Image (cartoon, rainbow, N blue to C red; front, top):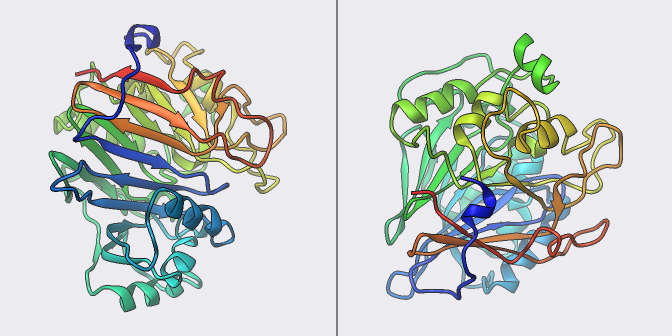
Length: 353
């Protein structure tokens, strides 16, 4: 289905929506998901918290949408893996007074910095667990988040060993009324000779994406001919992730990238080879429609960085019970000009059921 064929009339909020916030925390990841209102209450998942140095963006955003640290307890907090740009922001968040009911991680081994977060979590909750594939988090009203990969273990039983911390990332599939949103920290897609010839991607990370996406189809978690609505692109648009097999099966309508304006000199995220070749379907090994690419910031100015996606700041996705979802943005980020209008936002798309 082409993007233009998915466009439908803009609509206002309706009772029963799930909302996804991709929060701009610079070079890091942070996602807040609110389940549908049930008796006036929405369950919440915070998935990653960005860097500690950008925690003001996270706590400031949460305050702006109504989460007061003196009274707020998040139902679930999940850290995809133990890289500081994914867990660091949770340290000042918990110190500010926010509480958490249940905390999930990919397994705990001693690591400087991350232990500070664990100490805070232990002070806030006794409910601390290693996330396992197949775990389902109930968000109420028919919405749920399913763990499909964690620590190299894939839903359905496959597993990979001797992994980097990135490839140990937790992957969550959020679902509501036929809508699907996938996010997986810094999970890798590997490379091979054919892949390199087609997409020019190059990485030392293992290929977890191919066995994962094949398992999702085999386990009937997703349908091969329909894919998903929204892909939160792994590893900030690095070449390590989003291989051609993964893209062809996931076939997202929308791809969102959490990326920083002020990032390390060697990152150069998001990469041209991922955005322009894979996500925008400009090479022969990609046989699905191009995705609309939105990113939280513009990225680093260099020859390897793509500037084809639209920089729009914080991204909000409201999912309705009528077969549609609506994308909006704040336009709030450090560098460049807001491209929300050029991206056609606010935009309402149809769920591919």
